[in-house]
Amino acid sequence: MIPIRDTIRSSRFPVVNWLIIIANVFVFCLEYFLPSNLSDQLVSTFALTPASVSLAQPATLLPFFTHMFLHGSWYHLISNMWFLMIFGDNIEDRLGSTRYLLFYLLGGLSAALLQFFFSPTLDIPTLGASGAIAAVMGAYFVLYPASRVVTFVPIFFFGGFIRLPAILYLGVWFVMQLFSGFSSFVIGAGAADGIAWWAHVGGFLFGMLFIRAFAGKFPTPYTDDRNTSRW
Image (cartoon, rainbow, N blue to C red; front, side):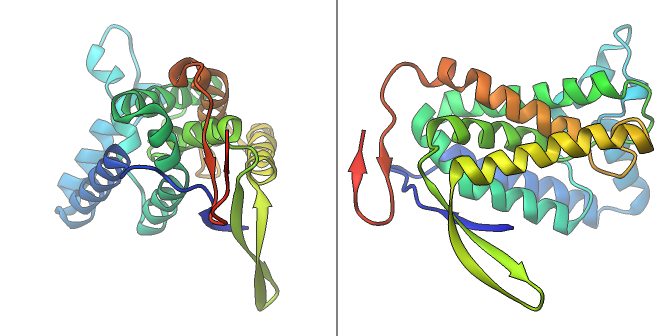
């Protein structure tokens, strides 16, 4: 199921969300266009390799933050940024730019910590914004469950567009990540298939559990593309 857009309209331009997207694109362009030896050094230095983490060496803790601005391929980058464009603007609209940036970074950190917990000896670099974006999706799940996600569902060589409730789309997405995380134990240490499933789970749980603390007690406005609104 490929999300196309949601039906919640933001009341202001999502400055931080776009700055995050631009930062991710810029860093990936560095990875892509630098000579291979420099690109490899960039990834090895700033991606999170759990086996290399040591409390005695504070520099090895930096990748818990920097990993979320690196990506492994154009597809990896574009798919992550697409999800961030769909769901991030509404969360920034709700939190405000400063709190949204803090929420995003802490969500990425929480995702990395859970991945590290399940695979502390993994010697493969972990990189990508998907854990932080999963935190945004978890926040959306809590704040906008009645929203709709316009979704393309491929059926053989064809497909169609349907409007799924956000609580259903994101709920199914989370269950799939959780199932894949447990399944990964069968084949390795949580990322042996190339995807850090537990980072997705950790980010989503952070978003669900802490979005209310960031958002405060004010009611959440709901406005969809049918020009109706309610509080």
